[in-house]
Image (tube, rainbow, N blue to C red; front, side, top):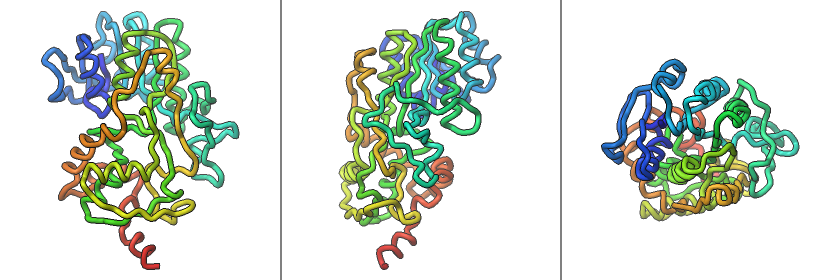
Amino acid sequence: MVIGATGQIGRPVVDALARDGWAVTAASRGGGRDADWGEGVRTARLDRADGDALAALVGDGCELLVDVVAYDAGHARQVTSLADRIGSAVVISSVAVYEDGAGRGFDTQDEPDGFPVYPVPVPETQPTVAPGDDTYSTRKAALESVLLAAGDTFPVTVLRAGAVHGPFSPLPRELYFVKRNLDGRRRRVLAYRGESRFHPSSTRTIAELVRLAAARPGTRVLNACDPEAPTVAAIGAAVDAVMGAETRTVCLDGAPEGSVGRTPWSVPVPVVCDMSAAERELGYRPVVSYEQSLPGTVEWLAGRVRGRDWREEFPLLARAYPDLFDYAAEDAWYAA
């Protein structure tokens, strides 16, 4: 059973498991079906917040439960309460749980000198923030804590994803470059000399890790990121190549100046994760590079925003980055 099956991560996860021979129940709020799924995939409606509905759907049991939308300790307890009816579980978490040696994490990044300085690459043994209910990071840490505490009861693989990308994303970072090209912007400004690295995670990479963990049940925490962590300048160049655009990049030596130079990947120091544990424990090998994954994402994004207000299409992205396309500020900066 896959919970959150029609979302960005759920779609390729269902497809990967079905192709691997699993009989899959694709559970989602709307109970929809992806066009790429075979007829052997069963669909079901499920409100993720309704623990009784989840228990009823699991019924007498399932060999594997994959939860791509679990968010906090409450969701984790819903899963662990079904331990006697589940063979194993794979649950998606986030690299946002990591904390550096000075107690800094993603929750402190907007404070003075608050951005975390992680080792490069970050191993799964890196300390994490304290579990709690206040932020995305602390809630994901709480999710992990409850799941791993039940590891002796049934096998649970926790996958920590980075900057997730692919079609159907509610927070598509690649829109930063796609929309600029569609709008005819032939110059762009990138902070930190365009060298920011925030490790991306293709939905196809995550799906492959789920597939491998399903075949090798165990209690473990693994990073779930792409084989490479390109710079923001390299990401822009890759999007340009897909769209056949020619763009001149202007780099700032330091931080963004207001909204100018700020992108969804703009970090002052690298956030790059170690994938050797997944290779060692699951036999993981890269299935797609960042560049290879881009054409489908770019096509989907272009289709979503042509002739439409990007804020209405992607409200989560707009809340996170309200000034993502402040062209007036950029033009004023160029003029100055």
